[in-house]
Image (cartoon, rainbow, N blue to C red; front, side, top):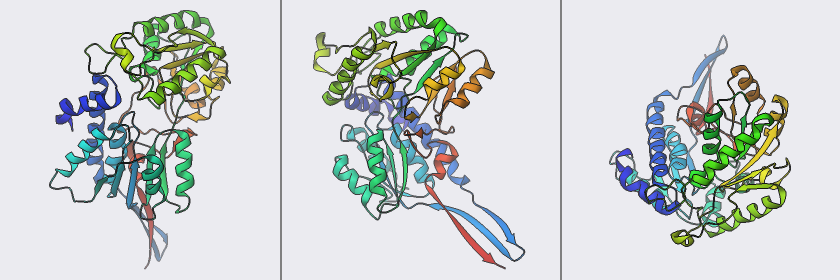
Length: 404
């Protein structure tokens, strides 16, 4: 996969719009997951125990069977390899359904697998079509034993409902509204850069774990927001294959209209600091480009603070102390990720434990490793990705009881 980066990365960029550097990083992340689980495949252990003097239990982990992997468009390859690698390592057969918006790079990747002579035919399969028909059939089909889905929470709920008819396993990595909590004692410049990068402006905010809620301690609020705003205004937005581009467009016109509707709502709910418009200068008029947008003084119940926008929009809120920081952080239905910035490690751990999310970074944001588990609390999903837990997701536990 790494050897294909020079031609596969431009294809990702042409399909999804992200800067070429982001596409290259995505491919490397996918390759890392494949390498990690290739090594971990030999570590699927069960256990045994004596239940009584004449009764022994053997507990085995077996493959689930046929796994349908439904992939989103925002990171078409890394969000495919993340479940594909452990599902294969556990011994399952796979049916992949890519997003209708980005099927090309996925098809090329599946072809790379198909060209490996040692790979059994029919173990990895590709079907292309709309989620409402093709995806729904995979979820309902009795021969599919598990569905792994990455995408928005609404679709995840529908998948759970459809999967209930056959009581198949589901793994769901869903929406987020991740809080990025900055205390006054944090390394100021580092936290500013971290807060801006956390919002995933480089991919037009189209990242599920994006830190789209910036929670700043009151005493540093004004200076902090000023610096983040300056960074947003300097960001070079353009075509992903153009040299020097730092941020690309949103995926399509529907997403453009959706994000702009949220921005108009935000203008009524909060104070617009920068951005808030579609970019149409020169060649930008031919695409779906939105200026990096920051809102300040965002009320707790504002839509732009509560709902996943999936666009380059950052909502700024304030807090006075640890308790209020945790309260504001936990004020949405989501719980995918979060971060705490402070030079007081004890404070960082206290607050991280109070934040109801599956992953909390301290003095960084967005670091994902194949060996480090991630997954959502609340309405951000079910199950875990990456790590040993990500491998076990694709197994069933069997108890064999032996009477001696």
